[in-house]
Length: 245
Image (cartoon, rainbow, N blue to C red; front, side, top):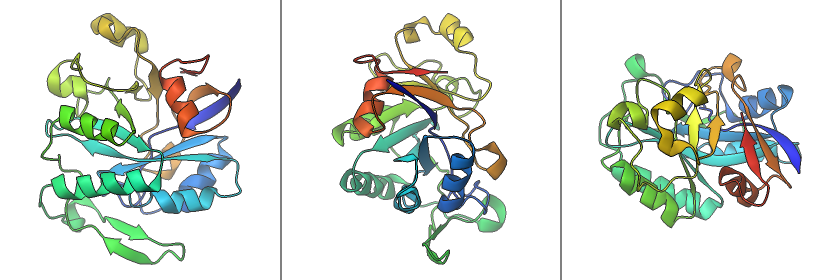
């Protein structure tokens, strides 16, 4: 097995709360400088910068996990990742269909722009991406599983916008692959308060919105090689693969 440094939760400038310096190429470059081997691209309710991030990873020693940070109807944040461009596009269609028609106000919430390789703006999302979808957490998890994705409740230790803060617990029948802690999240404290999580794999991530926060809360994957299938195995502790905080 090999050990790979990972940061699975990063926002580009497409997220309204993302710094305008957080272009996909900058995130890849900064992650490489910090020794990151696996990087997750997880804009709020949007996957449109994933392929550009993948482009900048070509012929470089880093693996990009493509997905989004989804806000459920309950205002809980969850991470979803997908293996192929086809499933990523199908999930983007699902997001577009279920994101409420609440307009973004850039002067208040921030710009929501998609760029190309020439740093030209090619799309500006008119809906506010930080809104909650009109689908509950069970429905979103079911869609992710239908598409063969990975589903991870985000920063479960936070007092706002986590599944636990919004619902009081993680539903026992919810299908999910692992749970995420924030930078200062205490796994032992969480397990004392929620012992039903004792057999779940924990990840940790930076939830980076600014350049200086990339890779400030990594976790480490024990894998044979970097691939979507290997990462899924690690999240379930299968065949010797695992995640270390």
